[in-house]
Amino acid sequence: MTRTAVLLFHVFAWTSMLTGVVYGVMRYWPLPEDSMELVAHPSQPHVQHAHILLSAALTLLLGYVAGCHAVPYALGKGRVRRRSGWTLLATAAPMVLSGFALQVSTGEFARSVWSAAHIATSLVWSAGLVVHLRARR
Image (cartoon, rainbow, N blue to C red; front, side):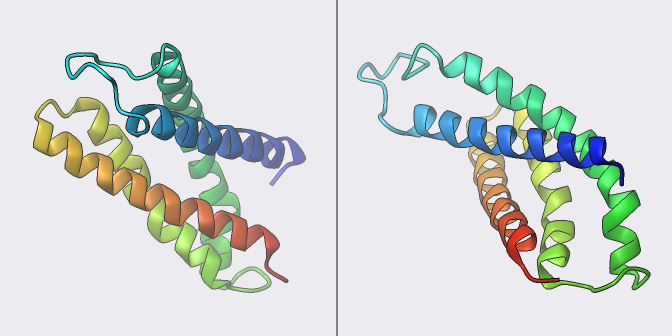
């Protein structure tokens, strides 16, 4: 992988994680005072849009990183196969697909299911990335 690809991956991964956490806090805590109110914070739509755009760029970079780095290492052509890398590979697709499904689902039950799936897989993927970067090679 090129230095530019690594830099872009880190920029989009960390900013996507940051906007996801900020959006989650704005969305789920504190709840709106009025039950008919759609947003709990005036910046919530802007943070949501930023998260969606950054995550789309991260999705493209995930495909590039998978082809250049993750899959060759997983197949044993690299130095070491690490469990944190397997965690990243296993949770990337469910994270991305649940995020896309969340964007297009209209029913309240479907949105809550996809939201829970997206939050869970995103947290596991993010923790896996931190472990993967800090693990000794």
